[in-house]
Length: 352
Image 1 (tube, rainbow, N blue to C red):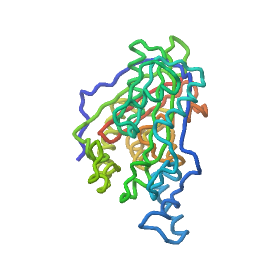
Image 2: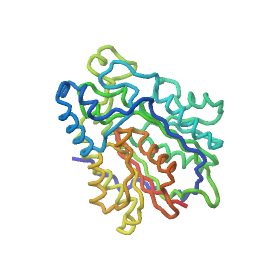
Image 3: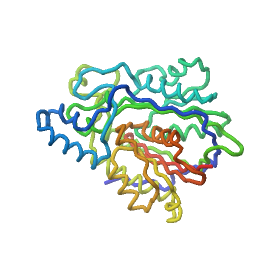
Image 4: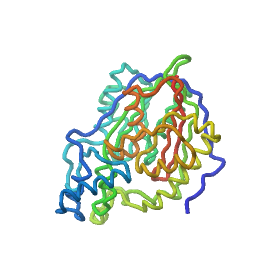
């Protein structure tokens, strides 16, 4: 049974006016990998007729919202097809964001798939740009995007005028060889956004922000194996994502329902939402939650073309929507995520 959301967890109301000074996205090079291509290589469906593979691929797309994805390491290969890492993808996204003439005073890099055991990945990315400013690594499961934005707001409130936030994942490197759901669900990508505090005008007002964790569930869905790696753990497919997906779904739904009730307590609040940007791991679950709560905003979903980007998914979709100028004055955007750890977060923004 899902653990209920505690009533005393605090929703912040920063009422923070921000201007977007830079944007960037990045993903591995090469053609996207389709559901049918994955099925061609998976041991359970390898050698099956092409028509059947296409049909099964469509079923996956309908059930979970995944059709294409980009991967640095294909699940059927023993090594990466490229030298891309979460760090290198973050660097590409940050480079694009800084082209917007952003001059950040602090930097947050969120990732659950860091390439460094002890060193700071955020500091390493900043080193590519000779920026000597505070740098923080954030790791909050699939809520990493919203956890990073949550902390960025606190830094701006503390006095930093401009904060650069990036999130990057190379989840293809933790695909479990025996769990087909991870073959379809995990993908790679990065996004970055530079936010500056302003007194008037601006692009968005951040109205509400919530982030919390429940460490009692830390091992429910994770990558087993202590660091440094051992030969025994590697042989047993340690350091690959595994867990009880059905149990995680139950906990995720309970958290989503509770967060929506807390963040948007009235029917009018829920009907005022124009756009919904969720963590993108299961489209049917997201639509089910929206229907049950009366959350009527339009769903922005990039997982169909980019797969589940884990901790980078929410920021990636936000940046894409900003690049395409989807938001109009007065639009309210609701963000929500639940991830392993267990982490859960939500935010409410309004377009100025």
